[in-house]
Image 1 (cartoon, rainbow, N blue to C red):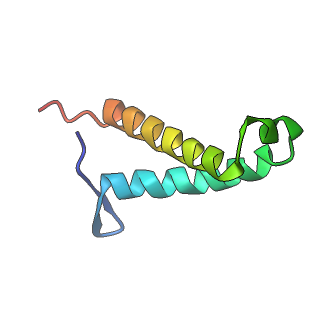
Image 2 (cartoon, rainbow, N blue to C red):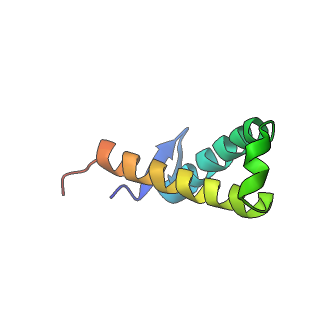
Length: 72
């Protein structure tokens, strides 16, 4: 598992980088989902946004772990 990333001369925890990317993606997708009326039928918006963030973070972590496989 990739534990840290070297970005612009700074070592950052990989989980932090994936969480920021997931947060920005969830924020963008939230704006798109709020335009659809069926989105309000599934429950409170806060719970759905949190679930969307968690699923995006999980997906990014799994894909990154497969893509950046260290082999050791």
